[in-house]
Amino acid sequence: MLIVIGTARSAPGRRDELVAAARRMSEATLRETGCRSYGFYADLTDPDTIVGVEVWDSQDALDEHMGRPHTRDFLAQAPALVSSEPTMTIHRVIDDQG
Image (cartoon, rainbow, N blue to C red; front, top):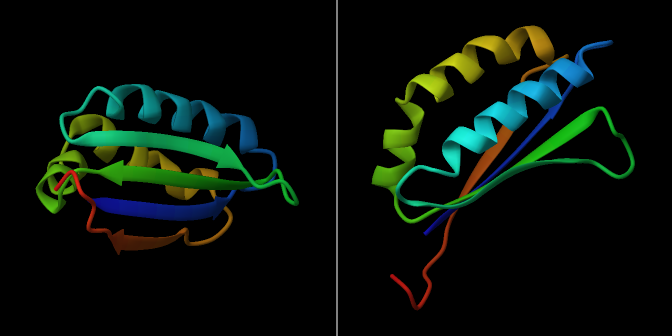
């Protein structure tokens, strides 16, 4: 299992657009095989900072996700909607479900 955690700060005046794009991304991604959980959340101390948390069955599922049209579209939109390079960490977790 993989847990992916990312953060990004919205560009000035672009938070609503970033949230809308994140919603579309979540809705499409949650239908993917191998996606256990996928969501975006607002930082409680800085609402312009958006935190993404993803849980995937495998590296293969994540790799497949990265090639999907909705993922490519989101990644193409994101640079104009954020104020700096997003951060991302991937955690590999061994669980009793495989």
